[in-house]
View 1 (cartoon, rainbow, N blue to C red):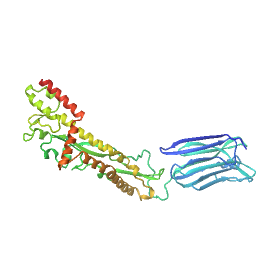
View 2: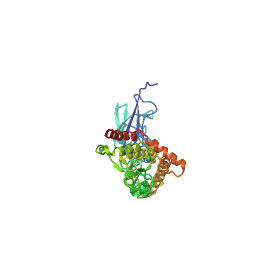
View 3: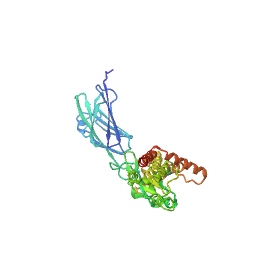
View 4: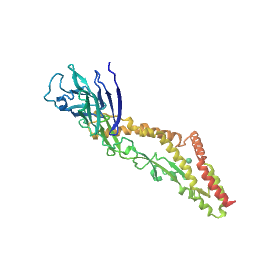
Length: 419
Ligand SMILES: [Zn+2]
């Protein structure tokens, strides 16, 4: 019947960091039977309060304001055909869960004893507060209808829940730190126990000293809070997680007259300063470094940069294993979901959440990483098949370009001197 012009405005903006409130404002230039309404979304558990413009209702500038949320309805009106001496302006709706739609409908005037819905518009005042105006076609003017404010409150089922999470509270796992440790860190003295060993890399899986690896983190290293917006407990760990490794050269084994009786060479300059009388030993020694199981360093030279580059390859492989599983580590917060009634207080939340985090750390990250690394790379050869697999891994690793490049640089320096 009536020609309608419909403007649909959708405004999306953020409240705090995460709360998303969608405001839908339909403005009709000519009124229809059904009033338009303002719909907001409750950003967290809490109460909604406001003040209706009671003066405008008494003076017939607007006739009725209705606020609905979570099945609760507040009505402030002056019924059609009657006068209104007093209208209470303040209103409150309590105990509204997060994400609940909140609608405000305003009626501007009466026709034939019926309320006529008004066009409305909404202003964001900031800090979870809004103002809603209604248009009265008889006065051709906008009038304030009501204010509306969202306030977070503690859910009734959780009298002991902590305050809502302070800003900046991030539920993220702390960094995984890879830390170089001295050889004494392991339970085994790898160099001493293996007199022929020239160097080694160990991922610290058999640490003898206490570490701040996950298992030692206590309730003093965890913060908790109850997030009223998501209605969930959140945690924050304040200690980094350290994965220790050892990478070292067994200098005593190399120089020991009982074993290799060799001389350590730390850099190429050392070769350049040598006498040509050392050439036979230098040539035999560099030949020995070319392959993993090469012989010829006995009474000769050991080039530490070459050993180090070999062990660094082991370190890189180890880091790849960590990388393969570290998403499982960083995703631990996604796996933990606790609502307010799960814990009786902060301490209870700390203890129980820490236990969940530890369980997930071991089941999702540590055990799979450790098992696959030990199985594939960090072999302890007891039987012939494993010995052979270990040997092949070492040969392939030693043949990598990075290692061979350093060997080539030493070889060139030796050839320059000895040609
Ligand atoms: Zn190796």
